[in-house]
Amino acid sequence: AQSVTQLGSHVSVSEGALVLLRCNYSSSVPPYLFWYVQYPNQGLQLLLKYTSAATLVKGINGFEAEFKKSETSFHLTKPSAHMSDAAEYFCAVSGSGGYQKVTFGTGTKLQVIP
Amino acid sequence: EPEVTQTPSHQVTQMGQEVILRCVPISNHLYFYWYRQILGQKVEFLVSFYNNEISEKSEIFDDQFSVERPDGSNFTLKIRSTKLEDSAMYFCASSIRDRVHEKLFFGSGTQLSVL
Image (cartoon, rainbow over all chains, first blue to last red; front, side, top):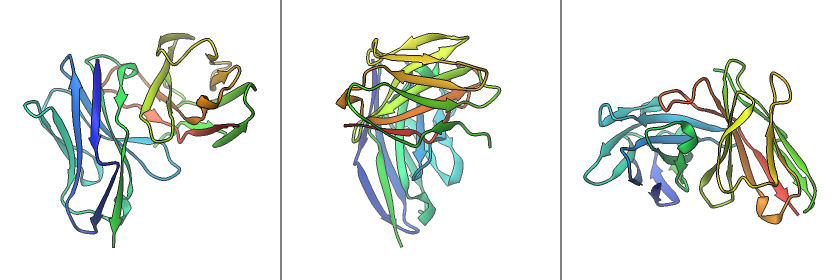
């Protein structure tokens, strides 16, 4: 069984401040981990993924995430928030199989304050 | 970038009615999926579809649900007799191959409201 827990359903940051969205996972097999973003009225878009290569993963729009096995975490960060980053972010986990095994978290809504 | 298209964006129906949610996956993709998200809850896997048959389904995907690829472009999810608890955002997705390093493309979703 696998699951992810996202801490904080809503996060607010000031424009230019650090973005930190937390995700902890549970998996009985080596996990593959993902962050998806959903902008208003749009579909889910893959930001980045960890598939057992480098533990620090860089994604689109300046986001990155670090896989920490000892902490079972895969937190998403961005050094400086932009207004355009306001969206909902989903952490997801998969076993070493296909996409049909992807399990999503409940999502974190990011608000960026001017 | 290519897109997965879902119609309608909003669907309102009465309990017990049949609904069909439509999706047009990306044209060269071979694997198709439905996920759903009940308000305030997690995005949940429903079903995957390949080569004109279901390859995997979750426990949510009971006999009330069916999927079909009626022609070369559409991929549909049918709920035979809707229940209040079927109210959710339904996402269609597609990928070229069913491997985790392949990119999964999601549509913008259909918000289903069952009254």
